[in-house]
Image (tube, rainbow, N blue to C red; front, top):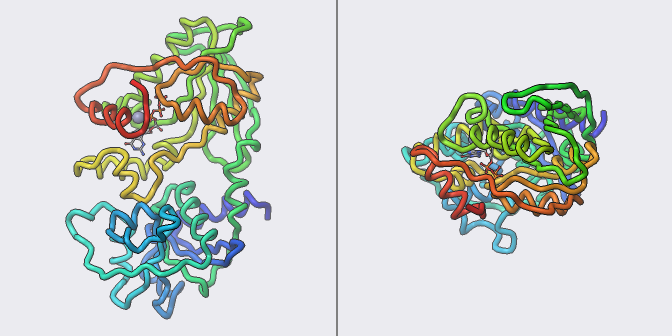
Amino acid sequence: MTDAHRTANAIDALRRGWPIAIAGPDGTLALLPIETADPERLAAFDPAGTAPVLLSAGRAATLKLANQRDAAAPDSPVLVERAPWLDFATATALADPQFDLQTPMKGPFRAIPIEAGAAAAAALRLARVGGVLPAFFASSGGHADLILTPGDIDAHEDAARLTIATRARLPVFGAENTEIVAFRTPEMPGEHVALLIGAPNGRPPLVRLHSECLTGDVLGSLKCDCGPQLHAAVEAIEASGWGILLYLRQEGRGIGLINKLRAYALQDQGFDTVDANTRLGFAVDSRNFAVAARMLELLGQRSVRLLTNNPEKVAQLERAGIQVVERVPHVLPSNPYNERYLATKRDRTGHQF
Ligand SMILES: Nc1nc2c(ncn2[C@@H]2O[C@H](COP(=O)(O)OP(=O)(O)OP(=O)(O)O)[C@@H](O)[C@H]2O)c(=O)[nH]1
Ligand SMILES: [Zn+2]
């Protein structure tokens, strides 16, 4: 089995609630994903009932386990000791923030040292890639048929594996002289695409990196600005004469649709987009724009004008070897439902408005 093949199987296992094991340089962990497993599988995985619970640093902080985190490495995963009363239902409440406000955690919870730190961090990364909650029963003695390494997960996310699969003419609303180019890697289920709009004129193209947002792009959600930004980007590129829209399959800033909708449910409880992600146990933004740099490179473009309010997109493209000669603001009018979202972008995630 190849590296990426093992990761694909591991993602499949996570979504089905089957155990996997990750072997890092400092030790191996057998892992059972809490979201998708059930009490019977837990009993089979951990007959002695001693496997601790692995959580992200953000989730641990939300659960007031912050003081038990490693002060030298505050973003490291946290392992919660398995007390006899910490059953499957309690572990589910540790994993899923949905009921945090209704059922305050009782505890006492105790964090214990993690020996297999690399495996623990890789497990949380794999949960994000697989779109499940980043929480596991984790045992150093447990058994799983499928064993992978942190490096296997790197291979799965490696932008260098991207290639052009096909291209065709695609007149779109607002830009009729357009070609679509589709990209894929052997393992990613979602294909990234580029729209090449207008005719190259020797100048750097006007480029937009658009991250997938099913709710905003397709369903007309008013909670964000994605739909209007998508259409305005096509218009702006068309008006500029020549440019490229990259449609990146990075739903929910990389946490997937289901976890984004969980974040929306937390926003219904009053948390903003940043705190909602943290409560779920994810980074505020999990996107890696190296994939966009690779797409531009495959399209023969190393110098671009970038349509964005997000300085992080500029920085990541530059780090990946694409020269951003100009940042062009991309601000759309707000509505009553997305005002707070836009204010949070301005105040907490460094967007320039
Ligand atoms: N996790 C999470 N993702 C969200 C939320 N709202 C929108 N998204 C996702 O955010 C991505 C869009 O990114 P934005 O941060 O809105 O904008 P940006 O692309 O970083 O910056 P600009 O280039 O300036 O527009 C899409 O993948 C959306 O699905 C949310 O509340 N939580
Ligand atoms: Zn959106």
